[in-house]
Structure formats: C-alpha cells, structure tokens
Image 1 (cartoon, rainbow, N blue to C red):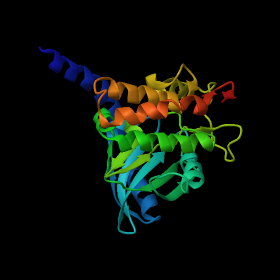
Image 2: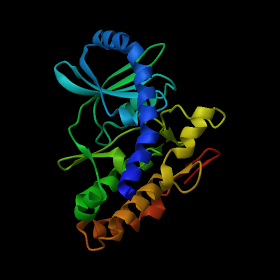
Image 3: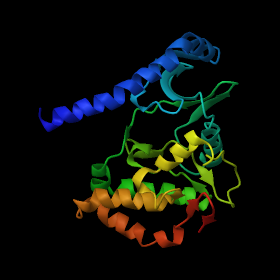
Image 4: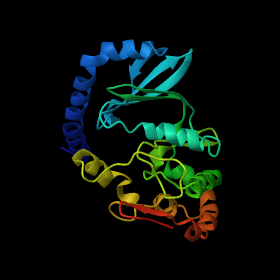
Amino acid sequence: MNGQLLRGIDYAIKVIPRLMKNYLLVIPNWILLKKSLKSHGVLKLKPFNIGLWHHGFFYFTGELNKKAVFLKIDKKLHFLQNEYVAHEFLREKVKLIPLVKFIINKSSQIAIFDFIAGESITERDIANNAWVSEEIYRILMVLNTNGVFHRDIKLENFIKRGETLYLIDFTFSVGSDSCPVSFKELKTGVEVERKILKHLGEENKPSELVWNDFHSMSLLVDRALLSSSKGKGAKQWNIFKTHLSDRNMTYSLTKTSK
C-alpha cells in the first residue's frame, strides 16, 4: 500500500463513524424538522457538508421566500444566539452574510442566512491579491475597535465572493469589558464546552485558553507569504503588521487585556 492509500483508509476510519452518528441524530427527527421549518417558510431542506457537523451543530440549505438560504441548527449547546448578537451589533460596521431569520424553541436554535455562493480563501489568495490582506485587516480592526473577539480566525472562516470578503461563524465569540453587547460564553467547568475551548482557534491562538485575533491572522498570513515573499499581498500585509502592536487585544478566561 502506498502512503496516499493509507492516509485515505485512516481518514475513512476517523470520519465514517462520525458521519453515521450525525445521520442517526438527524434521521429520527427529519420529518419533524422539515415540518417545523416549513411553518417558518423554509422549503427544499437539504443536508449540507455533513462531515463538518459537530457537537449538535447541523448545517442545511433550503429556500425561503424563493431565495436560497443556509441554515445552522444548534440542537445541543444553544450558542447560536451569539450569531444573532454579532449580526445585530456589527452588520452596519462590517460586511456580514445577512442573517434573515433567527428561531429559538425549546429544543434548538436556528440561524438562517442568505446562501452565498462563495468559497473559503486560500493561502494563494492572500499571497496573490493585496486586497485580501487589506480586507482581513480592516475586518479585524472593526471587531477590535468594538471590543469583539472572534476567537476562531482561520482561512475557512473567510468567505470570498468576487472581491467581497465575509467573516463567518461568531458562534463562540465573546466581548471585552467595554463591548456594549453580551455574548454567551463557553465554560471550562462543562466537559463538552471545555473540549470546544481547547480546540477553538486551533494552532493559531497565542496559547491554550488565550485568544488574539490579530495574532491568529498574522500566523495565517505569514505562512501564506512564506513561499511567496514577492506576492502582491506581501507588501500590503507587512505595512499592516507595523501597526498591530497598537491593536493587540487579547482575551483569556481569567482576564481581558489590551
């Protein structure tokens, strides 16, 4: 067996049980879910990216008022209220994918967004397009100025459509002491929430249980530019980095500092 085949087998062993578990969680409630969402005007419901379903979060596409929508459903932790809080607070300050409806009931929270036919940015996008690093910096400046910590800054959470960049997934965001809105926060004393905190931000955070959005993005961009120092995005990002020390807001579970 070659290395590629072995990696494929290892991936299947890890992923297939999770996919089966996710299917089993949804299938028994499928009819009820479709009926419930139909009462809110959502039709043509289809599972979306099942491999990314986790911790009771499920993703679907559908149609609302004859427009394509993306649905994020929280059946376990009930943290999607943070998406609503972030959208209401930041929507006039930074480009966000429109949240068209937010539903809360006893068993779940459901955030319904416009469906954007875009794609996650790549390291090549950063290296070859100066506007990408410029927009990343601008978005983080808006969050920083308004006391919001995203805490999961990674390439996958920036969606590019044409020359528009959207930052997504505010589910586990938090605010500083000066932030005028309140976010629901994960707790280290709850096992499942502690596991999420451990992986939130992945290898891009300064240290365990400490988050700094500019630090995370600096690591990502530096990696993207490492093999392309002459790329169009390199000069722009180097200019921005000279100002990062003035916007170096860090969040930890014991204190918030700036």
